[in-house]
Length: 101
Image (cartoon, rainbow, N blue to C red; front, side, top):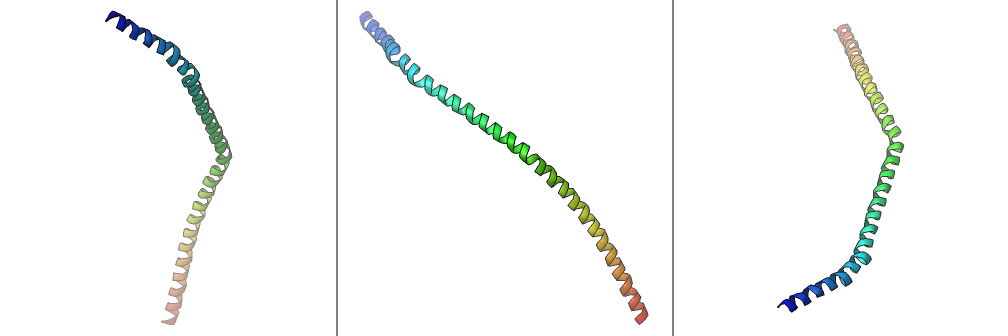
């Protein structure tokens, strides 16, 4: 039994030293490094794109916000003008109606 256990242990040590360690060194570790480098490169690229988009789009966003504010002011003015026009038209029709009666 002891010799069998010793052979199993020796075989396991040989498999570890001659199969698993080289496989890890030659396959797993390079693949892990390549994946990490790829992930880092993609992240750096995405960050650079987002930063550039922000720089490019920030003035557009500010312009749109300013335009929106101006349009709101214009709409408010139009509402007041329409109210004034409606009141003037009502007064005009009222005066005409009073003359006709």
